[in-house]
Amino acid sequence: MTEDTSKAVSTASRRKFLTAAAGAGGLALAGCTESTSGDETKEITITGSSTVYPLMSAISEEFRSNNSDVDPTVNRTGSGGGFSNHFCVGNSDFNNASRPIQSEEEDLCGENGVEYMELTLATDALTVVVSEDSFADCLTVEELAQIWESDSVDTWDEVRDEFPNKEIERYGAADTSGTYDYFIENIQGSERGHTSDYTATEQDNQIAQGVKGNEKAIGYFGFSYFYQNPDGLKAVGVDNGEGCVKPSLETAKSGEYQPLTRSLYTYPSLDALSKDYIAEFARYVVEQTTDQELVAENVGYVPLSDSVQQEQMQKLEDAIEEAN
Image 1 (cartoon, one colour):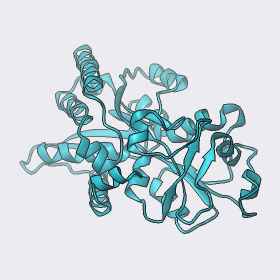
Image 2 (tube, one colour):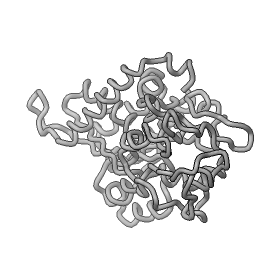
Image 3 (tube, rainbow, N blue to C red):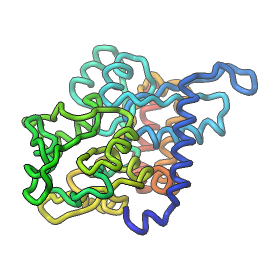
Image 4 (cartoon, rainbow, N blue to C red):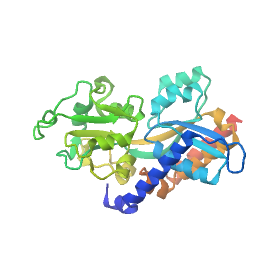
């Protein structure tokens, strides 16, 4: 994290914010059937990406605080798990994703009559992390591929001679995750696959905990989880052939951090957008995408520019009109 980023908001306040947002999501999962006014609560079901989860949870909590009769529930199912098991079979209103919807998911939605649209929410710097006392500071794309491919190396000295002869312990995204898909596509390629010799989870904080204090460990997740949990972790720089670049809000925004800078999305169904309260929630989500304090300082992603936000809002308004 750069000095400018670290000055933007204290670690304590970031953690407090994310904890509150996650807690709010947990409360929403429990469900409440009545609002304070006694009217029936209008529920919104949101599934999908654990990477998008902190941002959507924060936005949902702010919306809920001003709309006590609406209850958005945000679930971490992974991008693919959300599409396949919930959204494309008609069981959720939105699916968050850390990569675009895939052709087989499009087909599944089509088979079930689920029409949808894509909204861009923010930019992420997918982050490789090691313990703060690790010997690894920067890795090339090829070295990352050797660590994570199906036929992966076993020890760190197989990655680079100067590294110690210690077994590699890996922590990463589950295969239902968009982060898993994005990492394969942009690091080792689909033909080299992804190792099964790792601890897989949709709970990104578990990746952080597994890597902390473990010199042999390496993991990857969305930048927000490093931004929220910097103590005991080190973000690894990535050398894409033009020198080492560390992940940060600044290098993601500039496009310097390649190939792991990516867009984050949410997909509302048109059926959901035909309901006025869900359409209003969707508008609120898009409105927040340029909020520097919420998106960057509190959550840890790059906000949209005003022009891109306007494009997304027009797409949404067109979809709402089509839905009605």
